Image 1 (cartoon, rainbow, N blue to C red):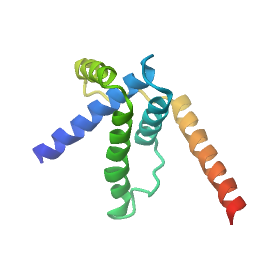
Image 2: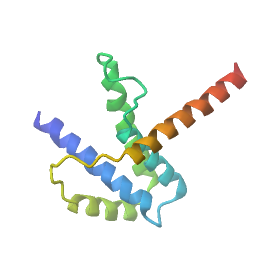
Image 3: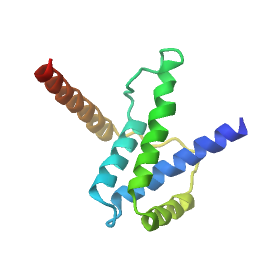
Length: 127
């Protein structure tokens, strides 16, 4: 159980580091886009497979999130990543719940709807 908690904490720190990398001026555009997509997926209340479906509901989070983090980390230059990881490790975790931002939630929902619409247009064209 301790290993699982440590792994979850490491993923949390990596997400903060990716957020910092996405705002860093020396991060390439492709790395920024992948990092922002991973962060949006992690923060999104909408999953590809809903969590109430037994086993499969959490499987997408256990596979997609670490894979996305891995891809984003590979795209970010090493010195930028090291700097952002150090800054993320220094960021205090108060244990308090985060403030809810309905504006950010609305943006995430709009992005998911836009992605679904683009996918629908693409599928309609090819089918």
